[in-house]
Length: 336
Image (cartoon, rainbow, N blue to C red; front, side, top):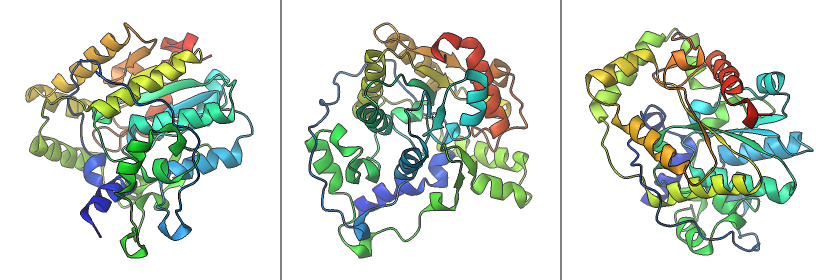
């Protein structure tokens, strides 16, 4: 298999190394360029089933298409740290019909594709948007295969980007992935992650202390390098917010929690600059776009529990419910 395909497959399979990565740095500078305008509807590319890469992004879109006859009123988006937000709990707290489209290793391009699909399907929809955020989300990665192969999404991207990224897709059955990690997961009908390898580890006796030990070792080994965020991901992040603003929505941007033990180690090793840079970037962004930022870095900020983590940054459903409740209290006007 050509090496470029491995990069695409890495997104689909959401490797443990990426899932365990802590926040990387984000500079507070604005993007110099914006994504090209939404492309015209195009003919579906010739991807037979044998060359269509399976994707968590497509799986959740299929859940929405199968289970929702009306537009979602509240959307949870983010990376793997946001996958436990429960649409049913959110509806009890807000009264809003909710879905969870958070994805492992999610990038803003996925949010852009989903949002354009929602507005294309439901032009008059009022979509509230809750975005679980960590700075690594603003790093460029190859596009999810569903954004390149699925007619619901690829019309929202410029042809030049699609052409360049499609060169990375498998072009023979031999090059296709043999396994997909997300297919072992369980999801609710509205997209919440109910069970994955973290839950499996718990059933086998793997403790939170062990998970934290491993997470901190990895964090200290890899370190946190302060580098500029990439232009394309940042531009699509801002363009997605602008599209929401244009439809009357102020998205809630939530900085996702970090376990208190990890925060202590980060402080000891002066590793907190990356999150502060993310705060500064969002503060600057808020001067030109309408966003509501909630900082849930510490468990005190949302009345969370240190025991309700899977590792240094992935929260359980119980802590996710606490985040929803805190967001409802602190940003009620944007979640009604």
